[in-house]
Amino acid sequence: MDRIRIVGGHALEGTIAISGAKNAALPLMIASMLTRDTLTLENIPRVADVGMLLQILSHHGVDYSVDGRRPGDDPHASRTLHLTARDIVDTTAPYDLVAKMRASFWVIAPLVARMGEARVSLPGGCAIGTRPVDLLLMVLERLGAEIEIESGYVRATARNGLVGAEIHFPKVTVGGTHTALMAASLAKGHTLITNAACEPEVTDVADCLIKMGAKIKGVGQSTLEVEGVGSLSGATHSVVPDRIEAGTYAMAVAMAGGDVLLERASPDHLGSALEVLGQAGAAITINNEGIRVRRNGAGISPVDVETAPFPGFPTDLQAQFMALMTKAKGNSRITETIFENRFMHVQELARLGAQIRLDGDVAYVKGVKELQGAPVMATDLRASVSLVIAALAAKGETVVNRVYHLDRGFERLEQKLGRCGAVVERISGSN
Ligand code: EPZ
Image (cartoon, rainbow, N blue to C red; front, side, top):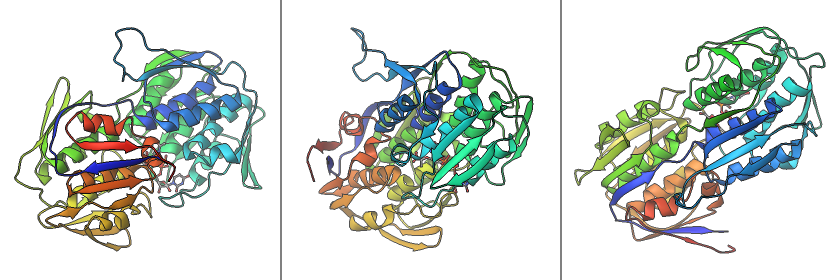
């Protein structure tokens, strides 16, 4: 297993190109199953989760090709994928595939909508909480599917097709909203979705579905209306820039100091995080190329933060922000409201000298003068990158183990940081 070695204490200077958003790319790839035609997706990030989802989609009969690099292209340019689900050859998504990646459960929506049946393994627990799928199943039931659960599998059937309905989410859910949009697009009649997620990744999926011929109103808002159509067609769509990647590097700069342009980052998608970073002492400026983040020697101020659905502070930046707060000049309070157990990074940050006390869904962080490098372990994607952020400002050497978590969602992190002056290297190895 690869490891990442970081020697802290080097300010970051330069430009980081922000990749396409993993959390938009995955549902967009799944949306390709809604049509017999080819869906072309540009700006697909080179992350492990994309590769894993391609395997899963292939299992269902999706053919794909990846554009090669042309002479003169940036060697690090993101990829273009062509996905064609001419015929769905298998409506079962088996445990060994779904267990690898939770988002693959979302294949249930296009399978039922297009084929009238799906048998998809329950995804099971994961490192950040129990993460049930009850609301996704509620969506399909509302749209007329029969749901049975047997031997760890969900069987959803709608032999005569799905039918539009009213869907109210008691809790904002990104995956639930993706499921509702995809399924309702091919359902007969009108669907009204209330308390829908407004995350930019949901909007990106809705925009792509509209290009494919779906009739969706209210995109970007919490009430969505969908008028089902008989079939969808192919389209070309470019994946939105990754706001979580951009927010992560913004926090890295706030932590390590320096001056970095986050190229292509969209400020509209990062409002609350940028505001909090400003309060913490980073200087944020927006220009045509992206977001510029600077911090001089003035130090980091403590800020209290509570995660919330978009446009609130994203849970996917909570661990990174906590890393930043470990070196703040005072105490801060971080409340996690989305996932009940998303504090796996706390123990590992403590290994670097952070002082954090947990009480239910609140972490109390007491800023320390200095963090000290140490061997640490990545536990999930965002937790891993929080360790990288802490390591950038820690004294001495930190080795982050189990880097495969990072590779699931961050494209060439060590190269992006390395080019800005961080001392960071990947060590290939078997332990
Ligand atoms: C998406 O997960 C993202 N994953 C997550 O990013 C992100 O943290 C999360 O949205 C919240 O923004 C992808 O896009 C691939 P939810 P999702 O349904 O859709 C509860 C990362 O690091 N809930 O919005 O699975 C759930 O337990 C990942 O990139 C139910 O109770 O999250 C949670 O408390 C991690 N029943 C809340 O809703 C359900 O049926 C929000 O979850 C579904 C969800």
